[in-house]
Length: 69
Image 1 (cartoon, rainbow, N blue to C red):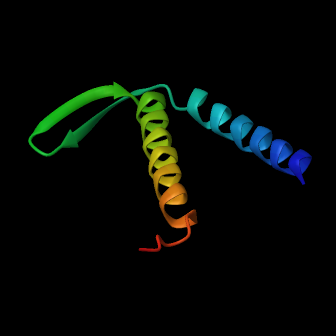
Image 2: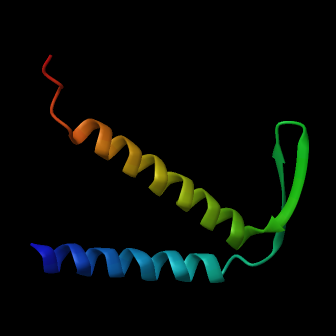
């Protein structure tokens, strides 16, 4: 089972790397009242990073059994 997780993670990582390197042009992103110019690859990476962090936080919070008082 651990090998399957590693293979899946490697394939997903390869897909992410391919998508990121194919999207290198600069785009403008509006964040509330600020407009930020950055490469689309950086925007994709930051979005992925935010999703991973949220997933980890929710996974650890939802995976714990309820506290007994």
